[in-house]
Image (cartoon, rainbow, N blue to C red; front, side):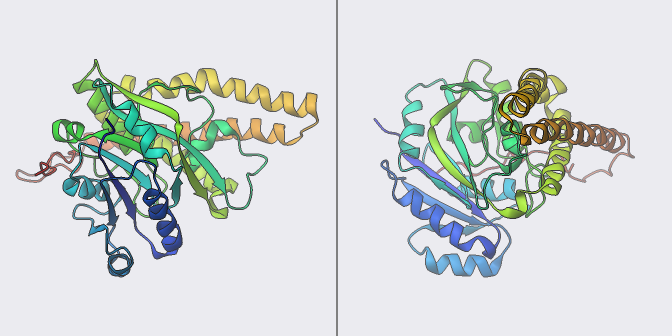
Length: 333
């Protein structure tokens, strides 16, 4: 029997108004209709008022926690009524069978969450130099992920779903990690998935590439400057979650990607250039090396920051530690 699903979409800027409307419409057209659609507005009163009118038949709420994607998602979770909660970005569109594909995997009671494929929708065309191994830079699935349905360490934010018991048992998304506005950081879903797997080591998160979401990539995210900035910020984020989860859990998948996938990507770039006359292959190989450099640089600087933070003067009694995860989500009534 299909699972009833709540869908949470978070938004923060009116610049993506049309995107938000198209995202909601793609959820309305699902072959398995959602039980409810929850739109969470992250600290933008004007956008909230506008969405309240345009989406009067939906649950439109404001982020009640810290500003940022983690707090917005947690606000959506707190009012969701279903045992399965799915998340999609406001600048994405779901395939009509998205929820049906996700729902089918929950027949297995050992599954904690299910995510799917995120295809980039390049608004100005895919840059010839941009390697598929780094599609995570623009919030999409990337070369190196399983080509068939398989367990994964963590899901990706634009296309993911969880059993409610995950949030009830281990808490919500940790504030202080995820994206805040246009700041290109992330990894809040990675930290949550690692936390859940430590709580249930015998259970899994599943990646199903047939559950597809299309994610828009605007021109401003198609340039080298954004590429390097996002890689650097990813390194900072990985250092932060390693502090919470331990380096082994926080970096296990990344080491496999670095040692196996990226060398093959570089080799393919050179082969494309030499054997097929595609000179942009050299640029893709160079982007892999450069992207890895900036990611490692961000990680090392992040480690230094975390070390200095850990050795600062202890906070005064009664002060709440800023790195505490949000564990106080309301129970579903």
